[in-house]
Image 1 (tube, rainbow, N blue to C red):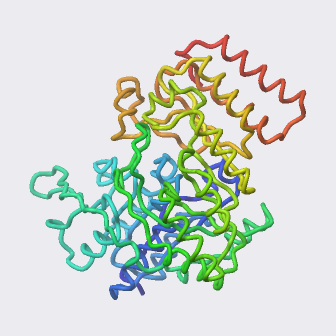
Image 2 (spheres, rainbow, N blue to C red):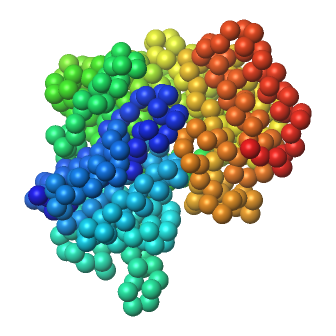
Image 3 (cartoon, rainbow, N blue to C red):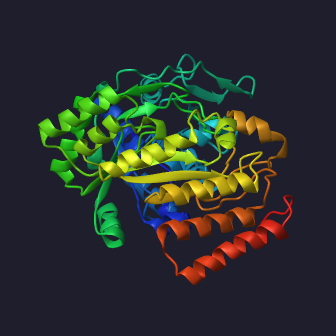
Length: 461
């Protein structure tokens, strides 16, 4: 028996792109919330639907653990949760319905539920935990009340309207949090999937929460513009713990932004060396943060790969995004990382309002000149409470969400159509990754140019 059953709604096999990538990571936030509850004396259990048929498995978990509460706690550190995909939302709704049928109280936390409180409450959830989850969830379970708990939203039984309690301030002392409750999770399927697909096993962890930068397309429903980091000592100690317990071959720092402070990065490298905690890792950061000293410290700490939000090779588009970087920072970051043998990878974004073919050509030129080790290509994706969303709001569908992470559908009237941007992504990926023959690559680029001239902006897939 357990008082609380925690779960999440990221089912790997509902997303064809993620099946193809086969890089599954455990639900870190769900495990952290479980650890925080257990430290407070609340009994917990976990149902992980990543690999298993979600509804039959969920029903079996309800029967096995007979909980009083069900908490659908999405992973705040996984970009799939931040994208608010329809497949994930629909599964969360099905969990709520199943919990209700069993006479239980379902609770939800995540980016999508924070942005669409009314929809999640209407789907059967008792309340929505907005903002940082651990303290709000613990306080609710300890008091079993609604009023007075920061970061809680619920239907008011008297008025029938949604009541939003005041927001909860993010915690500043991240070292006070326990380590994730790894013992609740079966790591074998994750290890097997990684080894079969890539020949190594990767695990995830975080060193910070939030991001202080203000790119106007970036949604921040959980932490807003706040940023807080753990101490270098605690992060290095966690790497040592993971290395000792699970022997991963590789780690992913799932922070929104890693190595924000050069001083922190240098201290982190020193702690990793002192504890003999070095494990190859990847992380994401900004091009303008990848200075020579930071790149050197990252290499000492074990960094093997950095993903950076390059977005565009057009300064006009970077400025329109409020990115706060110069195009030349991209090339400089590439050189600094290459100097230390660190893979440099770019996130690219096409379709931002005002982007022309000339801007796209500037991005293609930037990629060909800098030759990143890998790229991720997307189109501008409007999420609530962003300035970008407000710019295109009048053009949006009723519910502007992708079904899965490979959708790449244009949700507003861009310069070109969805088929064009999908073809552009395919061609540029193939070129950078060298996955096709020269003749096949030429055919892909020919398709891009055909779509560029044959489709009008109003045409969509």
